[in-house]
Image 1: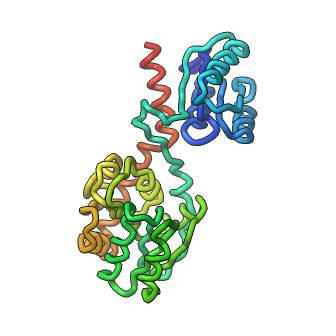
Image 2: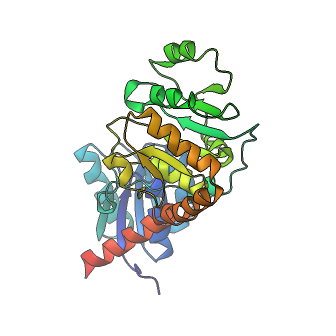
Length: 288
């Protein structure tokens, strides 16, 4: 007997991420579901995987009439509806956290390095603090390398300013597979943002990749990274403090190992599997 035997649900935003995982968990627990999303191929694939217990409709669920049509479809296909999980705007009952695919990062093949390597990924704009990281690099030993992924309005200027520093490798935009591999291969992941980070998903990805983190001490990053436990957090915009923290992790393997162990456990708390289970618990609390 599943926890949702005989229940009927509509799950939106189900063609990727936590919506997909929620659909799998609900059907595994005995529910029949209508799923909706914008990606036709992914939606049809999920419906096929879940066989007769799932029907898919491609739709933009931000439109009220289309939401009503999904409910009507559930009534027509399965005879009613017991709950609606709207993932289209982010899972509110899990704090707006989308969740991460832990194994995609933990099992990635590490990108090869030629020495101690720091990794940055993000848009090259003032808010992201890349200029501060580049300033901090000048304070680090000559054998330390920096991978810079992404691009943006500051790219050309920063490249010109650091043109004499051959330790900095400008990668441009990278795909998801390369991101996971570089996170696994780097010795330290650095997130030097100055402000405006609502949630540190990229920190969770680094934790899942078993890479120690130095990040700015911002409220959004503190949502996931506990100071001195999961990451070293430093004052935003302080290049000296950033360099010192990076140096500590590069020079103290025991400290890095401690952060990595805690970070792995922390990332697991935000895995898609764990969050989908929390969705299930949330449904139980509403049905009680």
